[in-house]
Amino acid sequence: MRDQFSVERHLGKAKEILSDTGSGFVFHFYGKLNFGRIGVEFGRTPKINKNSGRDHYPRVFSVALAGGGITRGQVYGASDAFATAPEDNPLSVEDLATTVYDRIGIVADKELMAPGDRPMEIVDGGKVIKEICV
Image 1 (spheres, rainbow, N blue to C red):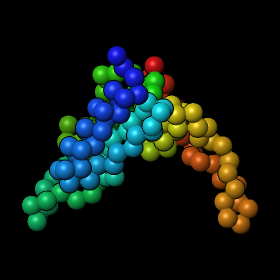
Image 2: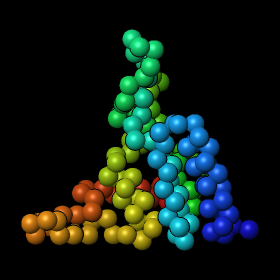
Image 3: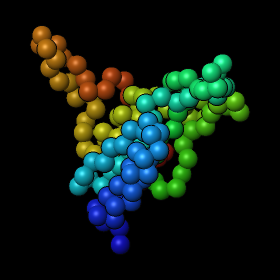
Image 4: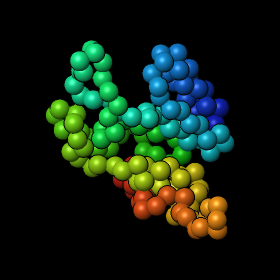
């Protein structure tokens, strides 16, 4: 049976595992909305640096979405063979945010008032990626 508690239990276990590894993953679970997101703040450079590590790399990174009207078991987008650039179906941060907000019932282009009475959208310019939605 798929219910809130099942989703919460499985996503909670993923959060526990990822947190224990010090992986730097960002985890959000939107409670009763049955929607979870696991992602990274930055990707990592495809090449090892001079200190035998990998630097932050914002051009290619991974995100896992679960529940909340997201199609199960699919991969959307791909990097080139060297993981240096998006190749198929590049997804902007704005598109990801707009899609997540859409799935949890928030209108992403709604205008809010910023300090100084400046109107601004929650997300500027993103679109819902229908291909990943049920």
